[in-house]
Length: 268
Image 1 (cartoon, helix red, strand yellow):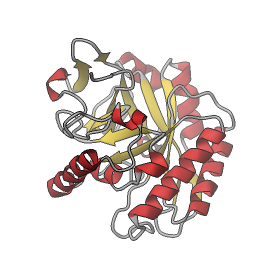
Image 2 (cartoon, rainbow, N blue to C red):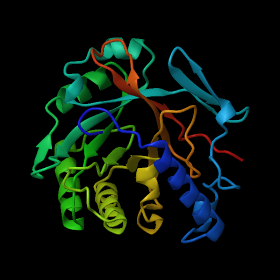
Image 3 (tube, rainbow, N blue to C red):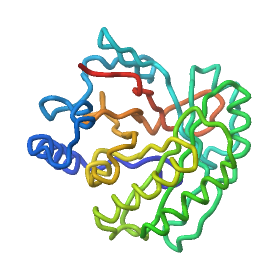
Image 4 (cartoon, rainbow, N blue to C red):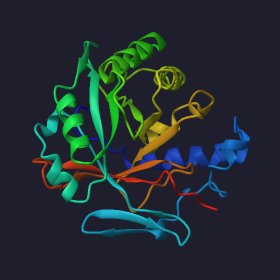
């Protein structure tokens, strides 16, 4: 989320990622029975693109069997003070609230200065809550340190949505040169620790970010995919689709990311 909005890779990066996905599906590398149930049968997009419809900037999904219409936002202190009652009245059902982040150069750990207020006010307005952490871990040890930091900040708070691991290796950041294998171990270690701490984890990324992860480390965890198109093109099921980073929501004075909850959709 780069402390504000998510980035989206170039079309070439997405094409290469999809080709890799197809090859993985054909080869069956490291796929268990549970994985097979979550992959499209032909290596193409898991979801039926024709089943997504957009109205006034908000997406829903209806394939005649499964329906998804819960809309969410993700926010940080970039949005500053939010009127959560106005947000709820504008049709927002859930929110991923940044709990903290690691600095992308010096590597310090910091709480999000608006987390406590956002969490309390969102719940009071009836908005279901999840959390996310912007990671810049360069080792498994740092990933576990981040998870412990998050668990301390959450301090047992109830969450209806998962705790997201956000790992974006942008040029100039301290994780820019982290290998795919190490990134996979880092993601797995963070998620393992979050689950052991009593919360459900989820891994955030665009198609490129998700495809670089070795699934033997992360196959047990939900995925949150950012792709600003007419539907997620990833071949594996994602639980949350972030479809815009320029959304407009009452009660939020900046542009904001918009998400669709796809967790209950099963493509047959």
